[in-house]
Length: 406
Image 1 (cartoon, helix red, strand yellow):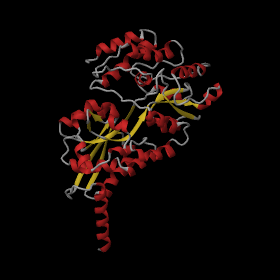
Image 2: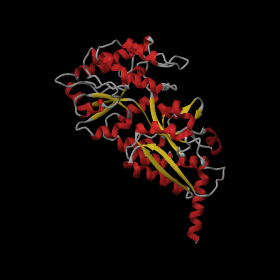
Image 3: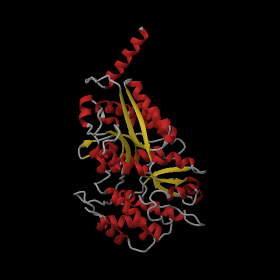
Image 4: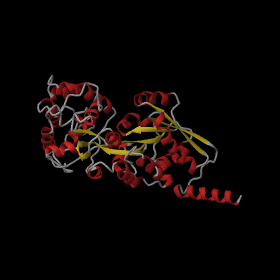
């Protein structure tokens, strides 16, 4: 009995250290946790859910998985039918579309004295809408260049500097192209992250689409010319998105491609050569990079919002972040846990820590509006016309602009 009382006292103290003021009902609460993924993710995320019950014995959390496409298709249906889970996964790039199904977290931060500075600032901004925070992050990352170190060394190309320029990138791609191999494998998102790194914008000051402005056309044109003029990259198929580049890199067909740190573990496990990571090339101005990531929020329709927020604090807390980072699942959005990802998941990847640290130090706002996903889909659909030389970059972007509502 005495040991039981000690355990109860320890649990109470642990709860009090995280949430000083409020008291919560001790009724048994069973929360659901909705995210993309599949059954092979059950063990990992089940271990995170167990952390919640360990800290709050009256709360259980049950993960529910959907495939990526189904997740976003079903989310508004579940929300409108009242079947949405208590805790909901959210990607920063989709926040402008789905923030309305989530509960604002700022009142909970204030009530609980919750320290939001524990998280990387760019992804906190990405998981907000206006001045309101709707989710806490579990991962974050800028787009970076993955490169084949063996091919770089064979061609006598030096390791990319953090502030390397587009001309440096193009020169490397040219030297690495030949004998049936490409220096670079382009993907659809390169035409968003790449031009922004060169200083271009696709939204105007009113956050309306302005995809045919001269600066964006010129910056996109630089990446188009790598394919259509320099022939340093194959064309990706319309609608292929960010799939083909990783495959060409893994087989050695291409020596560079652009993606985020969320694919680092699968990328290094899929190749039989040394890989490095560098920031995206900059333009004539200073470096600047957009970041993205994902997190979890509390459903506005949840009947257990207080308990869901308590669970959310644990799921994005230090132990959960360490588990995800060590497993290589994600570069944590929580700053004090990023060392685990660098020391374990990225330990064999040259330049990972330096490139990502530099990118975070030079991050710029990832500008989005409610129709951003339409814009990205149109880029994926129509950019191959410019890459193949069937249309000009300006004509393609003008066509895309004309199909956007604002």
